[in-house]
Image (cartoon, rainbow, N blue to C red; front, side):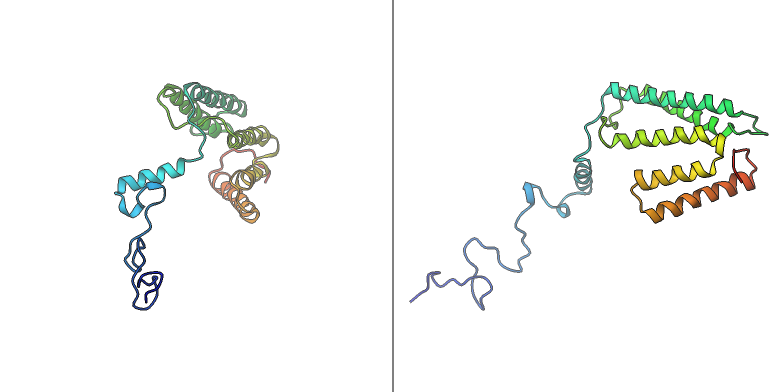
Length: 207
């Protein structure tokens, strides 16, 4: 007299056979790829990289259009021009005798050149993203930089630089409190030792 399984035993029973439609245990066969796509270990290197890039780009804001790219480039150029004006007010000096505005002048020149480059490639650029909630972080970073430039001549660079580095690390970079504090102080100390103590660059400072 046979059982309801007609003599076939369920998987895992000693000496038994597998049920109809079940994969043998230890055969190494998976239940199939999720979503109808093959697993990464069965793809070529190029296909695997392409799939990883697609996964990384999921959830990113949609790409910005030419108008957004133009506005971004104009904003960068305007920021560079404003920094150039502020550098001139600090005093430019010469290559042999730099003054407080020498280094900000170089940075502003780089900003203007980068902005013009963005403007020239605005129609061909596809890496830009539309304005989203994360874009406010960029605006916050620019705002803190403007405040830094505005107060550095009044109270020196030490306190503004430490606060700027702390805000960028803690609130924009989401670093821990201890890491943000220690790194901010270390950056200011290193900057002071290199540019003020060693090179005697005429940067406004308190000590």
